[in-house]
Length: 174
Image (tube, rainbow, N blue to C red; front, side):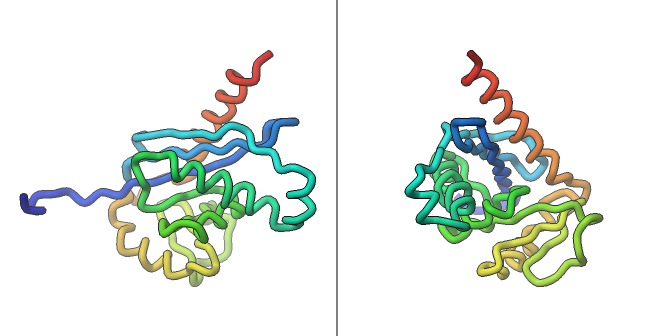
């Protein structure tokens, strides 16, 4: 079977976390096509570090908990692997140290400094990549044409936050 006639696609991953009072943090990962249509969604149960972990990880606790622990779990769970993972939380950039998939933090281009190394402008967002993986921006630039110029990358992140809030409301309602 030849590759002729195949359409090039890009799967986008949108990952967010939220704190559930008294229970820890939960995370969600929404996989969409390049037009934002949902393909798969996974979320975690709450993860709460114990006191020993808080002491040992110190200031790196949040990036370990959110990026390495929750982020890696979500990525392992999805059957459709994304070509990039986008988040609004810089702590989730830590996930990039544990996967070959580029991870970027989206920011409104109006509120951020000009584009620089390790960043890429997509639609109305400026994607900032992990400092140790700045070449991810160049790699994604070659696929940027697959994402519509009008893409609002903050909107799917809001959907993930709303889905997590709904899950918390449903699962932890008393």
